[in-house]
Amino acid sequence: MLAGVAVLYLLTFIFDPEVGKKALITSGGILRMIAPVLLVVFFLIALLHASINTKYIAGYLGKGSGVKGWIIALGGGILSHGPAYVWYPMLSEMRREGARDGLVTAFFYTRSIKLPWLPLMVSYFGLLFTVWLTFFVIVGAWLQGILADRLLSVDSAERLRQ
Amino acid sequence: MIVQSREFPTERRSEKVNERIIEALGRASRSLRMIAPMLLAVIGLIGLFETVITPEMIKALFGGSTLNEIVIGVFSGGISIGQPFLSYAIGGELLHSGVSLYAVTAFILSFVTLGVVQLPLEWALFGARFTIVRNLLGVLFAFLIPVATVCMLGFFQ
Picture 1 (cartoon, chains in turn red, green):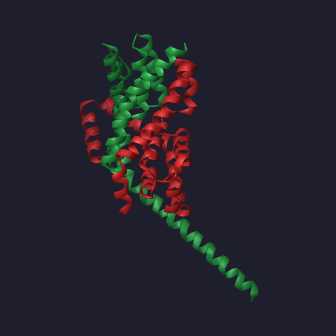
Picture 2 (cartoon, rainbow over the protein chains, first blue to last red):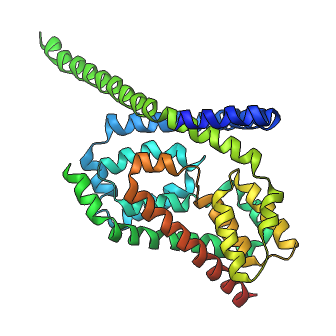
Picture 3 (cartoon, rainbow over the protein chains, first blue to last red):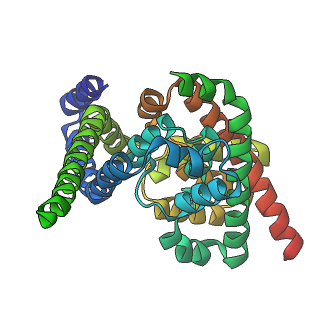
């Protein structure tokens, strides 16, 4: 994939060097922006390996986690910072250790609630709109989690058997 | 003698902890090293998309019936990339230029929940089945949540 993107950049530089330069600067800016979050994710993955075993993850985010699992997933998604793809490595590791697909799906969806940007949303669309949208995103994340658990249950069982 | 026998297990325990920390850091760096090329590719694509797809291009897409506008909102939000505040700014402008609140909500929601550019990375780390199911659910709810939000807003205003 990296080679493909490099070719895309090469073509952009050939046909429109200005756009290519601007895109490269934008990418550099994104890399600088996500670097601190990536560092946090790196230490969280290390922590996951050092102190948390499979039994612990299965207990908190696995099949029998119940309400506790939903609170961790929904709350974690709301509080997590930075772009979603930065969290992919950690979440895929947790999934491999026994975290439920539904909870990972719910985590991803509540990430759309950006706490630091809520005041700006209120200023653009009003308080009532922001409150209802946030409420429905949380409900939607929970419903998506339930549906994902049902639809991916065979996949999860196979993964845990491996 | 007694002191030695008490210290020995503590030393061994701290050695074991150190070994565990080093191993955990090694595993974490291996995980990130493994996805680094794909992560760089995604960042490169995002930079390219942000430069090529401008807010003016997105605004030009909207028009037609409310349902048509919601569909455009979901898909233009899905291919757009940037900080969340950008979606609010574009959404605000769309609202001022007469686009329905349903479509604007669909746009700002799919802007942060769907990401076409990130799909290859998600696919590689979570597998095809999970990626397809999660993103299809995301698209479905990008239609349902705006309708629910605007209906409740109308009910309470």
